[in-house]
Length: 500
Image (cartoon, rainbow, N blue to C red; front, side, top):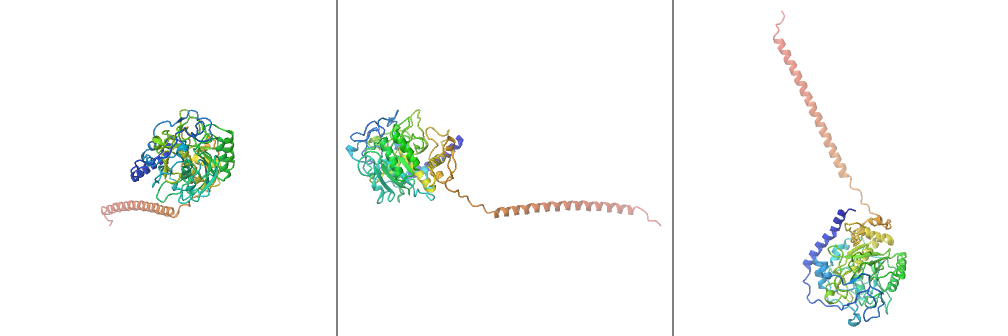
């Protein structure tokens, strides 16, 4: 695809966002002063060396090479811009980790609930394909800090569609989410559409399987993630969203990825943690067969890093930090999705603002659920290729180092015929036919026949008129010739004397 065409295609969601943000900004009340603070963490995130302070967290072992915790300035509220920034400023942030959980306890519920959608819904427009698919019959696993059990009961965003899987560190099941990160991810994937017009998930009829693979502070390691991935695949999930990456590859994790793929589960993972700029691969996103997702802002550009991973304090109140792509980054990016200043439900209720590639990965997982809801026979490879080949192109050589094949597009991914896309050019498995293509009925031929008849009559009439005119001209010439001969005959008779 040419560069020019790619830019034109990318302008479609950008224009939609511009209009949507203007409308949201016009409807939004003034940002509430003194927004409620949320107990935060100030550690170095899930890829830091050693356990979270004051907890018995399983150590990851080492930080991402070249990672810069909290790199850059400005949080989601500033980075998202426009209406997105206004919304982000009104609600407390939820982060990937909560390292001071032992001192301040679990994340507190938000005091307010949003009454309007997030800008990401304007960008992705998932409601346009809900008549075709809402993700019904599809289970997506959220492998992370757990999902608040309250979200699956009463008036929760996942009522009747939440299954609580195992907790792999500590006691109980996955229905306790001290960090709040897993709950926010789950509602971005499949949260129901609120009656008041607030934010909803991409696939509001999909089911969620919660698998807790971190400690209460959000820290994890390769063994926990590997066991969580296997538990999700054994639980029947078709999509596995891995909430937290780790810095180094591990045989157990690689084996779990292969196990999940063989069981028919597509793994979706962020290309970095939510709070660090990185220039090296993280895992499981670094493994072949895993769909690696980066975050973009409301302007369509790759999201930058900023703020703090804490979810608290002044930087945290600005919305946290997105993983930025450091100089010379060599990790793979497959697709992108909105990942700055998003609105999502949190533990105990209320609305939080969320920033980072893990939240972008949740939107991609929701899109995958929509696709499977309409095309359930797609294989893992076919589903991944569908998401890549139907993405909004960045207008550069593909795949682009920063944004891969472009921004995920639910409308095209669900509605596009199942054919080999652009990703096949890079050696990806071509998509086999999944759903029959609906061919529209042939157009009514009567107008064409009538037009042909009218045209024939018109041409025939013109020909007859031409013949008549020609005949008239010939007739006039003949009459003129006869008149001339008669005149000469009369003159000859008058001048000759009659014979006697």
